[in-house]
Image 1 (cartoon, rainbow, N blue to C red):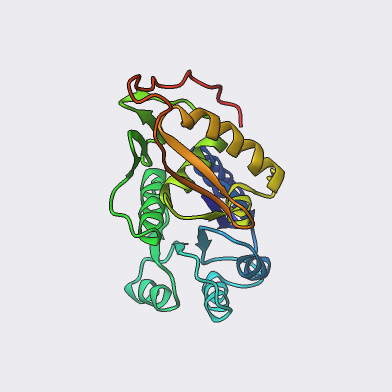
Image 2: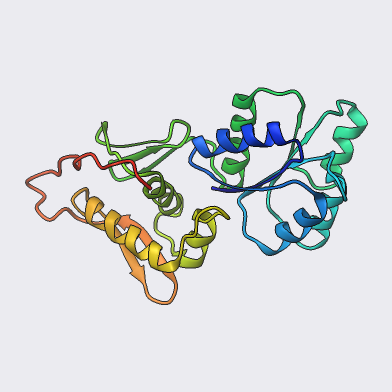
Length: 240
């Protein structure tokens, strides 16, 4: 998941970036409203965390500009204002959720996960394809109950493909989601990661099919020898 974080408090923003990246999410950080307006309209993000008290342009104005410009990304507002009128104004301006400072990081993470589930129309934190299971809440991948260890980027790509199992996921969408300002992720990188995962999941009865000109599709396939069920793959390293 790629998140746009707009927060001008250096200490708070640093802590938030670290917490979100520990979840395996890609984070782009901005500290003023004017830059946030442009970035939210031109880049692809899964979610935005937007502070209301920003320099140059306040968060409420940023939010209104996003919605007026057609940006549909879910937005969680951060604010020190706890008045009912402020919460109502934020929601009416197009926010999807509202969190009052000071807050606990676990609550922020839980709210972002809930927004993500809502976007994908899911009520559960578990994805399953065949006997491959992905626990989104704990970021754990398993096959027949045994852990399948993958790198952070392999996990993120697996999650994207499993969320849309049986449907094509565009290569450009993968690049946009797995990239951040601090780390480039090209279409060539996508091909490398897909090749790795395709080899690993083939023995589990799962294929990643290339749909030329469009992207990739994850779906069930028959094991090479049904009389010899696949064992969980050997643990992989954790490098990205």
